[in-house]
Image (cartoon, rainbow over all chains, first blue to last red; front, top):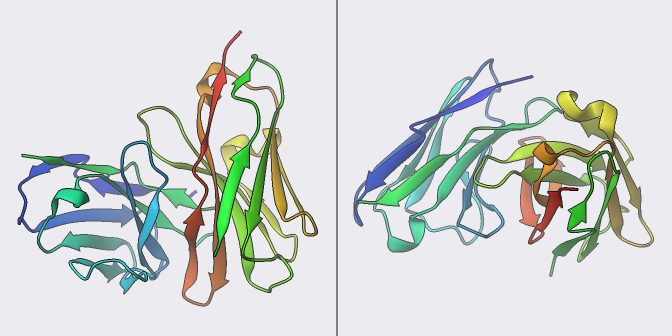
Length: 107
Length: 122
C-alpha cells in the first residue's frame, strides 16, 4: 500500500491567517493527489485534484502544489467556514489511500 | 444533477454480513471512465477507502479487507452494492459512496452521498 502522512494532525488558526497543510506519500505518486474538506457531520467535499487543479466552485483562496512525494494545501486567508478537517488522497495506485486528516480549529 | 444515496441497516450484529446499496442519478455506467467507490469513517477517525468499481466492471479492494468485501453494480437500476462479511465492532462507522471519473490526470471523487451510519453491536 502507498501510505499517506499528513502534518500537522491539527492546528489552531485565526480568521485571516495563511494556513499550510502538508501530505507526504511513501512512494512517488506523480501528481495523483487530491484534497478534500470535511465539516462535522457532513460528507467530504473535493477541493483540489491532480495536486493543483481547483475543483469547480471552490474559492480561489485554496491552492495545492507538489509532485512526486511531497504536497501542500494552502488556504491564503482563512475564513470562518474553512474550520474543518482536510484529507489528502492518492489515486496513483488503483488501491487508493487517504491521509489521516488535519483538523483546522479556531484559535 | 448528480446525486448518490446510501441505504442499508443501521444496526448489525457481530459476525453478520452487511449489505449496503448506493443508488445514484445524473450519471450512468454506460459512460466510459465512470466509477463508484465506497469509503468509510469510524466515529472521530479518518476516511478509509474500501472498494471501487469501474464502468467496465473492473473492481478493486483495500488489501486489509479484500477477503470480506464484494462490490457489484446494476447498470439498469443505477445501483452499486457493497457486502462486507463477518462484521465486528471495529466496523462501526459511517459508510459513504462516491462517484469518480478515471482521467489521465487521475481519479477523484467529485460527488458523495450523505453517508449512512452502521453500528455493529449485539
